[in-house]
Length: 302
Image: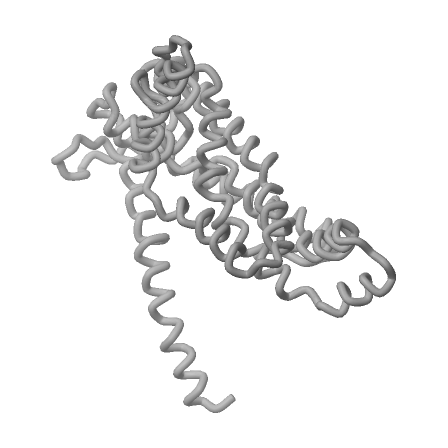
């Protein structure tokens, strides 16, 4: 490769380096708030070392809240990992649709929800499941009586959050598996057909093994990010009745600063929690990388 081509490739890569630094590494500068006594609007002047770390660990109220939040976080992440095979299943069956136009319609229809904000998703949920929503109105049309506000109920909160997440993300998550299916050697399918293999046998013995390496990498990355559920979904669906079950770690960090119980000392505390989560996530990533080497014949994910 000529030096000019290398220089051109480096210039193409520069924007990636710039945006990675701005959005991934520059925010780390905010970690300094966990080592200072800070009030919003004031400068950082009084260095307190690990005072906020000790205060958070030794405070029984924070300990109780953290255990509750970790329970919710791990359950939601666990449910996500347990159902992470659904995009593979969806991609395989979508690939079996022979009508190209219908296949594109299904793929487009299932991918669009990924681009809808959680605020709009909540608006749809409100129109369907509130006291005067579509579900209760349908029950009344058929002679029943129901005025239940399903969104305010704390029953099945984890399952409801999981189902909304699957509806929103399954089409988008399946794209990488659809790309993986297209890279499988077509001669394998032709040979299997000559040998008399049926459609489900080709799916099970050719497509599924062909997608397993991709699935294993994504699964290990999911395990590494088990403490990161995101915040938007849980923020818009939270209410006083389901707060104990819906508050995950990212939402807890947000509520410490902007929630109803926010106080002057909560900025350093929220930074302590966020910083600890990032460090633990990095450790989990290296553990997942080690597991990848063990189970994938020395192949690592980083």
